[in-house]
Amino acid sequence: MNKWTNLLFIPAVLLASCAGEKKEDNSAVQAAAQRYLDQYSQEYQALYYASAEGQWTLNTRIVEGDTTASAAAARADEAYAAFTGSSANIDSCRKYLAMKDKLLPLQVRQLEAMLFMAGNNPASAGEVVKERIDATNHQTELLYGYHYMLHGKEVSTNDIDNLLRDEKNISRRLDAWNASKEVGTTLKDGLAELQRLRNASVTPLGYDDFFAYQVSEYGMTSQEMMELTHQLIRDVWPLYRELHTWARYELAARYNEPVPDYLPAHWLPNRWGQDWTAMVSVEGLDIDPALKEKGAEWVMEQGEAFWVSMGFPELPQTFWDKSSLYPLPEDADYKKNNHASAWHMDLQDDVRSLMSVEANTEWWSTVLHELGHIYYYMSYSTPDVPMVLRGGANRGYHEAFGSMIGLASLQKPFLENLGLIEPGLQTNDTLLLLKEALDFIVHIPWGSGVMTEFEYELYANNLPADQYNAKWWELVKKYQGIVPPSERGAQYCDAATKTHINDDAAQYYDYSISNVLLFQFHDYIARNILHQDPHATNYWGSKETGEFLSGVMATGATVDWREHIRKSIGADMSAKPMVDYFGPLMEYLQRVNAGRTCTLPESI
Ligand code: X8Z
Ligand code: ZN
Image 1 (cartoon, rainbow, N blue to C red):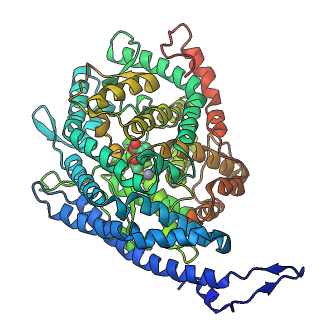
Image 2 (cartoon, helix red, strand yellow; image 1 turned 90 degrees about the horizontal axis):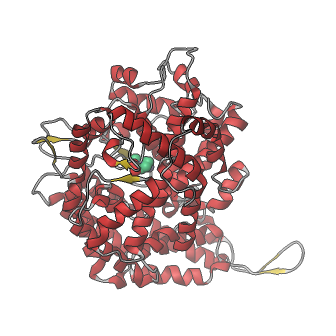
Image 3 (cartoon, rainbow, N blue to C red; image 1 turned 135 degrees about the vertical axis):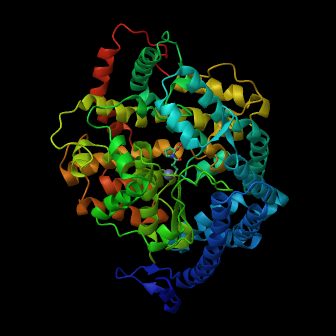
């Protein structure tokens, strides 16, 4: 029972306020709306759970040639879609929203969230929704059932990532990179289907296209989102340009090659060139050897211990029992989704994570990122937050706090505290800042530029399938300054090698927004709670930080995200704290890059 039930007992009379003016009594309509919301929530939770279970099996146990899991997932997804998009629910939401002035703000917020969910599954779209569900699940099976082959041997994506991180031989790097892109060709037709079906699913309720639909969850138009993301690119561009120049010269020297104008994709330590942190090893701060010694289980346990040290509860036992946290054994006769994710199965206590954790720095950060989602779920699973509002203040918030903890977890005082580095060690702080920029700054042109513009073209401008690859590389060159190792023809679909293009469509700007938010929150916590330099913090054991964070997360999506940031840290969303954080790096890079040619334009 939730806190609104007592409204049923307020008599339906006009109440007089103290000032004497007549105030309309809306209790009857509020009570009726509440009855509807309560009933919806109950059914919604059950259908959501069933759909999540179907997806969980589909993503954790992919057996070649066996369609049982996708058929079961489809049934549950269809039931969920039929309910959230039913004409009866759409009519009821609209009916109540037409009298929203009479309703409580929290009721209006729920109805808007419900109408948003209906937008993806409207009954009026007919067979399209079912076709989209099938196409989505099929795409998942193709992507995660894929056999990556290298030199005639099957390899995992962890193997490929490890090669791209460590391999010095350029031709072996090229082989690994090529191996990572083959999967795209098998996904191209499916993406074209999804492009059509996603757009056709959302237009009946009045959205222009699937991109506009996803953006609308922020209360923004596509144009506003494109302007916001482009502005982020402009904000970081001078620094990105210096990083790009530095990387061209650095990698050319490493591989003993001439300095290229644009970065060849296979030179970079990441399949998409989205994270270059592995290029820098700061003497004394490299925790890979220590992690390797301790093992993947330790990484998981220590991730939890970090959150617990700030006052968050221990993870429920079901998390450990039901999650899929480590790579499958080599002889497993099935496959699983190899990208990290966090699941709120029943929108209550059943929280799980799907990962393939290995004992290295990337996975250490990823574990903390995923636990950020999990602790967000746990923070708002309270009677104060209705089922349909169990989400982040916006989607970017949901991505932010785990990454923020990941950032904090690699700073020196923290590592010292955890015994991962020698206490009192002298280190090069500029190099550490450079390493952080190779993650957070490098991510912006990729996320806000390549991914966001590609998906905008895909959905808003109906990019034809024979132009997918040309558009992809046009954007990669423009925003990241990266080029493919050789011509990539239209038979390839390199965009589709990125999981989000297939299964988290038109939402990648969330990560750019999260980067902006996390630096704002980190700056606030460092200065106002920890009283430490934002570049050298130690969150470990800070109950005050935990209390602050759980307060920010506990309201879920019951709040307006713009008001929420103002109330939490006294500022509007702004990239300034992120840009300021890296300020000292600019001078260093300009010195190192003196006499080198920059090939990226001065402005974008
Ligand atoms: O996809 C993710 C998370 C999902 S919960 C692991 N991230 C983006 C990516 O990998 O591309 C986190 C940072 C960017
Ligand atoms: Zn995430």
